[in-house]
Each structure stands twice: as structure tokens, then as C-alpha cells.
Image (cartoon, rainbow, N blue to C red; front, side):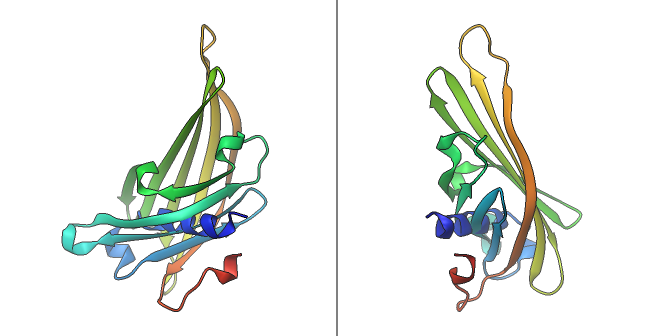
Length: 165
């Protein structure tokens, strides 16, 4: 199964957090709900002006309305199309696409993270899958739209993925 990969994906999303919010070390995020299993880690390099230095994870999408090409994949920084902060909240957007037959299928995942208590962060994900047919009928069709909760915390050397498998 892709559960360890999903955990890594969630961690990737966390790395997009504001450097001041992330502090030292990587942030780790995970979700395991009826729609997705994901995990990722994310880190920003304060010495390089807050540039993203690490984003790694995986995601498994259980919703059968989502195209098969997006049901299990590894997250990496090339998928991150946007990231922004506002009033202590960090958001980032991941984008993936696939050509299937005579259509372009897309997956957009937005992650929103807010500082919580101590080393914990509260997060939500918003996922949308679309199909855009080629030819004269090029109207985009929404295939699936779901959201859910992420749990995030600062990753320590002794933290493992075992709790999310």
C-alpha cells in the first residue's frame, strides 16, 4: 500500500509553512480519513531566506470518482505551484495532471495550516479532480471535490511513520 508514501506527502505540504512558524526542523503532517491517506514533511531554510529546502511525502486517494492516475502518488516540490502566508496561516497548492485518452485530467490539492498549541499545527486539505475533454467540447467537468483535516507537528529524530501505517 501507499500509506508510507501518503504520510510523506502530507509532510511535504507542511514544509510550505511560513519559516517563522516552522522554526527549526521539519514539520510532519498526516491524514487518514475516508477520502485520503497522506503524510508529508516540509522544511524551509532560514539561512537561504526561507526557501523551501525539503518537501517529501505521498498520497493515496480512496474516492473512486478521482481518476485512477491520481489515486496513489509521491509528493515532491515540483508539484507545489503556489505557497503563501497570511496572518500566521500558511497555505500551499499542489497540482498534478495526466493525459488519458482524449482528455486532460487534473488534480488540485490546497493545504491550509495554522499554528496550534506547542509544536502542533491544525490543517485542512481541499481536493478537486477535473476532466477537460479535447475537441470541440472542452468544458471542464468536476469529477470530485472533497476536504478533510490534517494533523501536523514538528518532526523529531525519534518520530517514525509507524503510527500512520
